Image 1: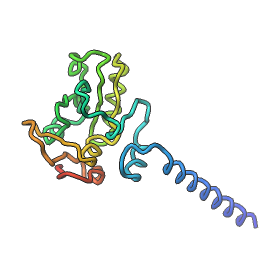
Image 2 (image 1 turned 90 degrees about the vertical axis):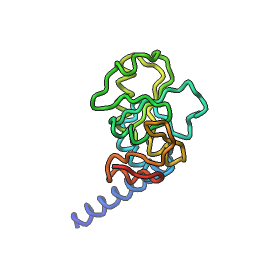
Image 3 (image 1 turned 135 degrees about the horizontal axis):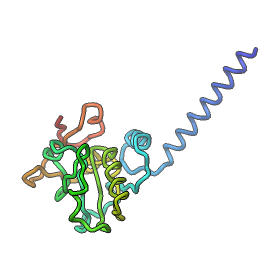
Length: 176
């Protein structure tokens, strides 16, 4: 009898947690098109810095500086037009020394993990108007925004980081 009660209790708790999680993920702010991608990003990121969704950006605002926190080879495949490469593994504040501390900056990477870390470093060093691009360049491309290659020409290619993470890039030609 005791085992049946315990099993019933565990099933009830699991059901409540499952329903609660479903309601939470269904109602939380969704800054990417895919609910599954949003759920992955929600658990992957710490959310300790300001985040901005692609569709929230005024792309006509030429005062926004885009910083690419991916590795150089990823940036060379494609990047947001006029973005400045800052890297991740070898990031250095010297690469942003020319920007005023109150410059509107959006940092991005493939999905938002590496850029979240760089955003935090910028904030820790006195930058005041910095946001992490939620969903990264994958969501930028998924929402039909243009990316350019090293010559500045529009391209359909996007470095997909890895085959595992590349599943979230729904539009464009994946390069590994």
